[in-house]
Image 1 (cartoon, rainbow, N blue to C red):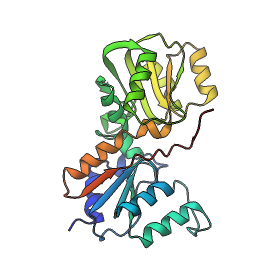
Image 2 (spheres, one colour):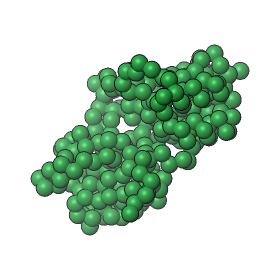
Image 3 (cartoon, rainbow, N blue to C red):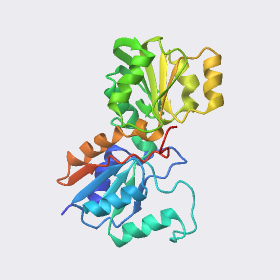
Image 4 (cartoon, rainbow, N blue to C red):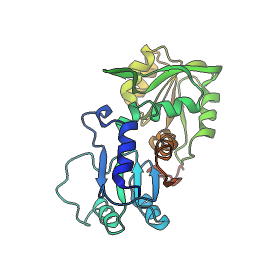
Length: 265
């Protein structure tokens, strides 16, 4: 019998909790380590749609990239959405586990997953871990063939989930790209790092107006702006493969788009 604890052991070997940022909250959120697991769902966000899907499919565990709680809470009453989800999971014996910034920095993490989708070569982290210089947040490497920023954005569009917000380009869309920096999720803190790494383009999500404009006005490389959800979705097949390689369980990857933007007018 495979248990929640068995799944956690595999996930924490693959994505060590020590790799997580100090502010992050990773690991088991809801559930009993001794409960049996036959079906596991993988998703970016722990939210109503993902919980409903797990219950409908009969899953005993959900593994998400984003934690349910990042800040202290004093109540999980059903007065709030997250309290409702917690009660639904407990009633239906669905465990919830999160691998967040530890999965961003790992060897099979979100940055590596996105870099490999693009076929980047000779990649290194944008921000290496102190004790593991080959691991860390973000990635920078070179394309197997050069292309324009627009061509690279269109290639990305074909590789990641489609969201209503789409993909944005800042800077010259015709610039030829060889060296690519990327950081799935919120990455405008790495704008200067990407520039210093000699990137011809920087791919990330959640770019704020002032950091992005200051970067471009100061002669920084072009930007490709993805949605947070779409930029991190490629890590899910990696998580699934890690679990399936060691445990005889059934799995699925949620294709529900959990980006907050529903429509582009």
